[in-house]
Length: 76
Image (tube, rainbow, N blue to C red; front, side, top):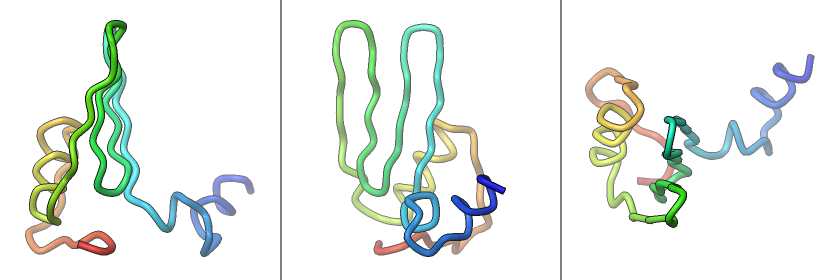
């Protein structure tokens, strides 16, 4: 029930944002809308994702997620 609620409620961040996370031994990659960041023991780096095309590239390269050509998420 909780999964259904968080994935369908119109104000849920899982419905209103693009969110991806991937953890490794010494790092955690996160994409939340247009912010990409990597957290490591020695600190955090952040980047801004400038376009839908760049977001699709980041999802493929960093998270191994691929989507059909022309996929568009949210605002950009």
